[in-house]
Amino acid sequence: MATKVMMSTEGVEVSRVESAPVFEVKDDKRGVIGDLTVSTGGVRWRSKFGREPVMLPWDEFDELMKAQAAKK
Image 1 (tube, rainbow, N blue to C red):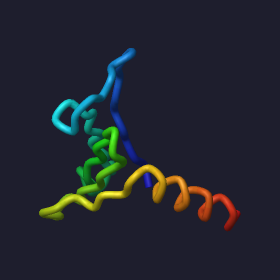
Image 2 (tube, one colour; image 1 turned 180 degrees about the vertical axis):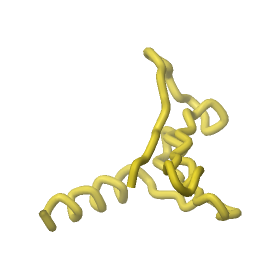
Image 3 (tube, rainbow, N blue to C red; image 1 turned 180 degrees about the horizontal axis):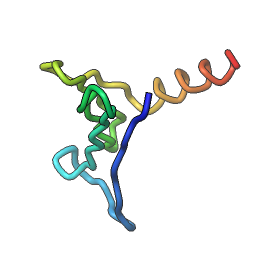
């Protein structure tokens, strides 16, 4: 799957979800897969056809990533 994720910034402090960076994730064949919002409270993933984003607080995101790393 060829995927493109675009983001560029320097030293931007995220103080509110309204100012949080949003990463638009695209696949070469399917177009937009979804978008990822990174905020002080955690990460939010909204798939292409998703109405509401799925929120993961940072501690849960950390545990999920550790579990994924342990599988390898």
